[in-house]
Image (cartoon, rainbow, N blue to C red; front, side, top):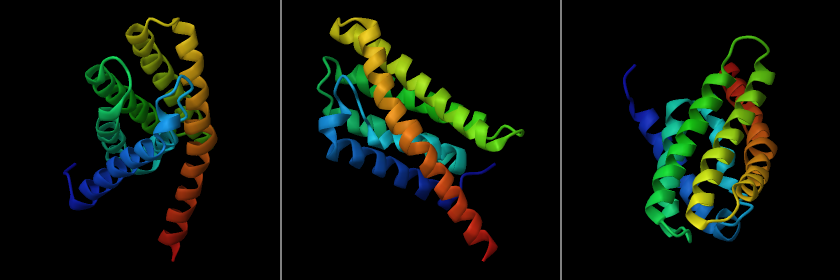
Length: 167
């Protein structure tokens, strides 16, 4: 399994898209209820694999440079780690053999839990606010971004790619 120019290009595209979406929508990307529209890209790891996983992780590191949290370095490091773990979970669970659609959905749910608990936990530690409040806030935003937006986006892209393969 070598790295090819297509994978590098996809990684750069995902990183750029993620960072731009967070920065353009910074008003909702760094709040207690973080609706990071960019997190809708995490489930695309089910379709694109490593390039999406690495791209959303790098994009998170880039966008968290402007984080209003007390420790930007913590937000850059742990936020990127959360995206990496969420992307891996979505990818691997989404590709399980039986009942593919349900597994893709379960991959999105696993990614949502990863983001919720990792990001919610370190933000609670950074801000001194109650842990459950951060889990509720990050969880709500992650459900919107990853499940409500990301899961259908994954389904649409899979159909488009399949249609293009046939023609």
